[in-house]
Image 1 (cartoon, rainbow, N blue to C red):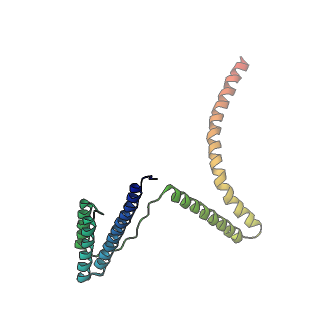
Image 2 (image 1 turned 180 degrees about the vertical axis):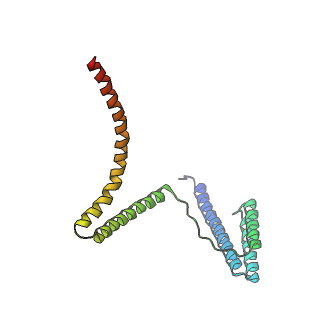
Image 3 (image 1 turned 90 degrees about the vertical axis):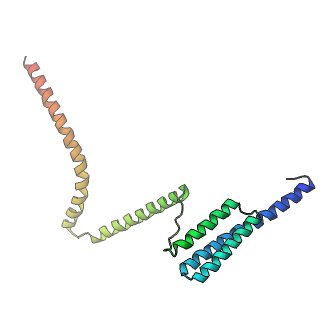
Length: 178
């Protein structure tokens, strides 16, 4: 914090100037929005008045040094391009996805998947037929996918063992006979 009286005054002046600059920039953004709205309506007189107000605000902000001259020129060129392009379809704003929001979204997805799975399980239980046929139909599909994967692995493993086993037996058999 400043200790000298003049420094304290200067801090207050700088704060006032900063607030004034914020007001200029905010009003420029609002004026741009008004120009775009006028373009969407298609009224030439409204577009012209909104454009004049927008350029006037930019010039005033530039004179007070709230905006740099290059920034002012860029904003004027931008509004001219928007006006010449004419009315456009309104697009929704796309938000940037941050890690925090992505994590929250992933958590919501997993929660909804869990709820959906519970509901599906409940529906399957309700729709099962009653009796011996029900036991066969519910058990058979459940066992087939589980049985296929390990069976395939075991089947692949068995021929290798089967080849090795006869080879060992045949190797041991002649050795025993000799």
